[in-house]
Amino acid sequence: MKSVSTLFVLAAGGLMFAGCRGIPVPGEKTARHDLGVVSGQYKPGNQRPTLPELTPDSSLSNFLAYALLNSPGVEAAYDDWAASVENITVTRSLPDPQITFQSDILEVVKSVMPGFLQEFPGPGKLSARAAAASAESWAKYFAFESAALQTAFDLKQAYYELYFLDERLRINRETLSLLNDLERIARAQNEVGKGTLQDVLRAQIERDRVQTDIANLEDSRQPMLTAFKAALGLTADHPDPPVPARLEATAVNPDSDELLRIAFARNPRLKAVEANVRAAQAGIAVAYKERVPDFSFGLMADVKASPTMFRPLAGMTLPIWRDKIAAEIAQAQANELAARARLDAAQIALTVDFAEQSFAYREIGRNLDLLESRLIPKARQSLEIARAGYLAGTIDFFNLMDTERTLLNFELSAVEARTQHEIVLSKLSLLIVGEPPAGMALFSPDETRRPISTKISK
Image (cartoon, rainbow, N blue to C red):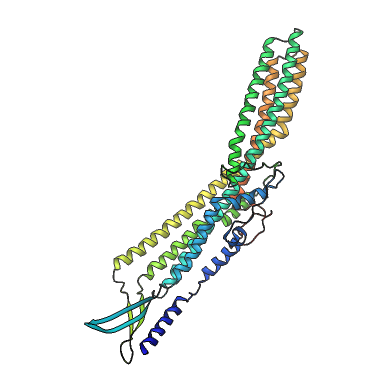
């Protein structure tokens, strides 16, 4: 009976250990809170939320919301982050307790000794490992941010290119109509002896060239639509999405100094590298803790003895391999130096990229202003003068066609400049500054880098 009661006590102890929960560390609590807030918006119940319904009249924010919620790349980055948060709990937890059994046998069983054994890492080891895991989790979080911002940029780039494709088609079709009119004028002038057949042929050549350009532009719509579809996270077997019917321009603060300051405070790629530096620093602490021994304690009971005999167990590791410990510390220190070097490189790259995009933004803005406010109006006026001059016989048809071609090139250049202007602004705000689109943030862009909940328009 005593043996049974002893076994019952040991079994109850095992169940007690099995139901134990560890003590969360501060970084773990923060990470779990942030993950819970983001998952409530991004993956409530570990399921994708209902995607916004898209129509040609949907706002750009709805298209962005659809892309963020439907992107496989964003989902993979989110799941990586979620896994890294769970890893904090794994690393700060004690090893599983062991159920032990020992028996002395000499012809017959002399003793039966079940028991428990628990290992305890040396003081500070679990907290150091948890700190490293927390820093690694932040790096994964910023990778999730980067994936979301990259997806938003891809969507906006495809959106602007599709919209301005229609603008280029419109300009070429207007030019084609003008060339048909010029051909009729050339024919009429030729019939009354004021023009030559060569004028008619020149008009036809230019008309055929523009018709081919229109055909090429119309053919380019499909690959552009495919890129837009891919940015929305849609595969080939999905139907083509609607294309927005109106353009929504990017709004960004043009103050370069302020934008650069914000970029250093928010850029998620930079923040991910900073998190890797913190993880490397925590790795050094973990390496130094390897000099601390681990301990184990247990208890066994001889259930055949009367009275029951208990045998306490204790053990301690001996960290005697000093060269191994020194190598682990040196490895951790080298990892930190490499992480710091990568941070310096990332800061330099961010500064250069910002300078290049800021210059492109200013240059394109100046060129666009020149084209829209001066060159295009003057080219249109010049075309009207050339047309009247040709009818009056004061200029030849070659000059008339050259004037028409100049206007067409200016108008197409303006469309290209507007396209690049919007793409550069999107890159500045999304990929460099790290400013999420209005209403689309699944995370906080403030200095604390703490995820917060924001509503997504449906």
